[in-house]
Image (cartoon, rainbow, N blue to C red; front, side):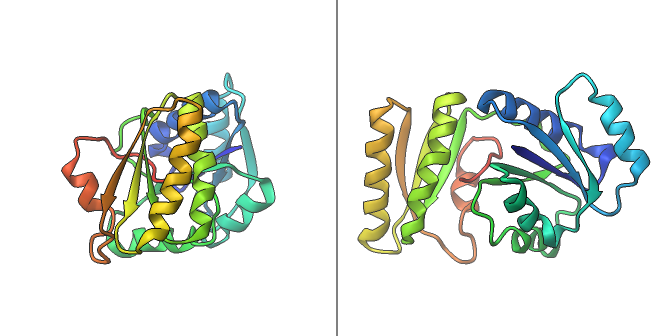
Length: 206
């Protein structure tokens, strides 16, 4: 299931369309979950607007702090989160809510264009669990023909390098397009440094 978490139905069109496109590529069911500010009437309008699409519209409204538990209960495989405010505190609140997620997620600003999954970034640090990202990246490579870039952390000795080696072995077996780039995870500017120097559109981190 690809879940879209909507906080403002009036500005969610591009995020919803992005989720629909991804769901079709991955052969997953798209679903919509709304925050408490979204009224039943607004949800009804959304359902009518996308009546031609096969989408699950959950009737309950869920607070952002409970989204991770909801995803686990419904076995969600990818989460789109609508960002209402772009200030640091507001974005940090979304990140905190996603701290316990074990799935890829994308914080989606209203001014983003419709998502294209032709490039995917995969940061890899020293944790053993990082290898689990390989299955998600593989899905993008297989079903979306995505170019995969592994961002290997240079801060953790050989642990990140070993995980990257295992990932690249897997990707090579399936002839995915991929590359590896070393990066320093500076606490003040962990991931934006790499993205800022590239010409890529904002995309998800796996």
